[in-house]
Image (cartoon, rainbow, N blue to C red; front, side):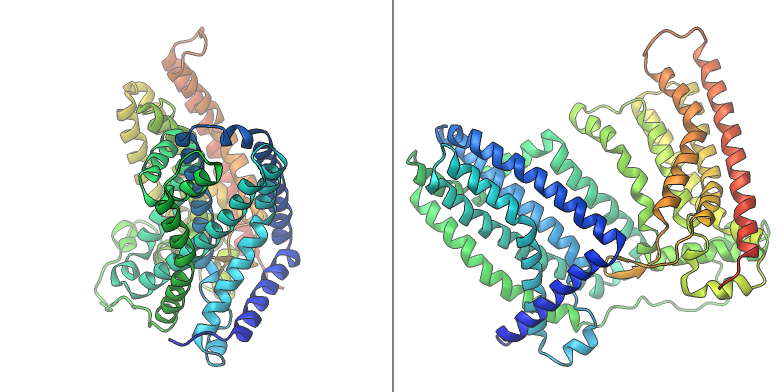
Length: 536
């Protein structure tokens, strides 16, 4: 491994930053991200500056334990924030240069890797510049003093750089494992689904659940992550271990070049490694899952469409990754489970409806755009519009019924839900699961999307935001009566003049009627649009 060229590193980093800027200002989505991110950063910066101004002096006068706790919390928060988002960005796009084949035959890979790392440092620096300046300004203008503000400035910059290097290196490790692991290559769908759920939920738990935050902070104060607090204590003159302070300072600043070298080494291994290809032996007599489930029960064309949808999701999970979004609405319930160690009575139905919405959207929310480059072949194939749409509906409904049933029954038993209430909740969730794919087809052809978006470094066609909105609106209206009846049955909000069984039955019948009407309308309209669609 050779030392990177400074000139080429700067040139590559500048090019990457220009590309980022063009993406932000060249598309509506990028402009919204830029404006929304700028507004959020500005609001957080004002809060950070005000907190540093008003409470910095009080913290400086506090006992050593409080100072250590606050300093460690700041280090863990900044390191985790920068590391988490850098890891995600590296795995999705920043971990490999654009036009890699051309670039890596023009310059040594060390220059390319150093340029990408420098560009990532630049992005993080631009994002954190205002919050860090607000923190330093608040401390300097308040009672904490200029010396504490200077220590906060140097420490914040060093921790942010360390988080960037760690996140970048972990992202390259992730890409290397994904390329070289036969297990990951053979189970991409399962691994992708697990990662898509676990990482965001873990991050939400870290940032929103107090007990998780407290436990992480307790572990951090007992680790070397708390040693930089000794620097602050020495500056304040309220104690502190000079040896720990020196070791912490040397460790942070020494880890930066070591981490950079590790990033260069990992880049060489990740970029030049031949991805493992799962061994798919062709067996003419093998019966696929769709054969076992659907052969002889539905027309061949419908079965092939369903099989195509499942096979695409298995080989490229990123194409259906958007469908996990409904599960994030369960965060409030998960907080209750973690904090109170009880299953809320509304969680079984909420989880079932989230599952219904997810499987309904996965294959049906963009029936035309989801075909991508093979759309002309699909439209000219000997497959009717109804057969095509039926295949998409079955692709979402069949696995959705299984998952929804397991979620509702399992959580219902854990929550101690009465049998009648649980049966009605399960019936409502299953009605939604069966109706959701057909509703999604109708909304998807109203708002089709053919333009690709960058997801985890790949160009993928995902459904339109308008299609998402209309889909959730129609599905929400359909399940509203049954959900309201279920809520009134499991929560004693106020006295009702009717029996719970009658209330639940009425809500279920109303929701089923609306869901069936929406599903039939969506199915017929979607099938007609697919059958009559013409390319320009």
